Length: 222
Image (cartoon, rainbow, N blue to C red):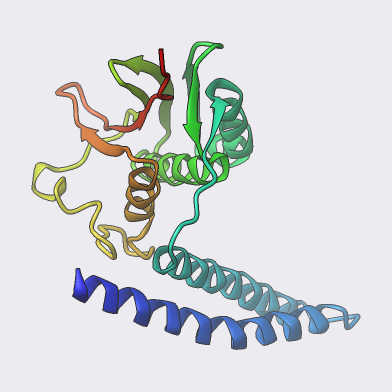
């Protein structure tokens, strides 16, 4: 835990230092784009700089997100509209990746959540599932009650997670992709544990992966 805390602090420091020159770089590129007319070759290079600067900014933001403590604002929230909104926001990317979606959730289901943080967790899980289906597939988002828990699952039709790395995928900075920080799933874990819940992974024999978020129900007094 001490090593992880030290890494987190170092990560936050590096991310802060990266953001400052990136802001200047993006500002300079924006000014260059205003100069008309630009040679076609120069416009192409400016576009590359702009895209890569944006990617670096997103990486820095993810590092900062991992390092800083969460301050959750948990309120009773209907889940189905939230899940519908998550899929709607993701729909352009999912359509481009030839990924279809399905939603299974009762209208009356309410959970004590921080809306923004849960949406962030689901975004990360959907993004992870999309990467697991480079040729397209189906993502099914489900929410239901189970004993003292409310479970939200994200199931895909990808190749599944190999058994030898299933215990590693929630470890910060662990990734099997050539691009990426390896923080997406660890941030999901951090968010859900902040809600007093947990995240589990199943890989059915028929294929694919099921990531399930376990959230405690609203406590009622009789």
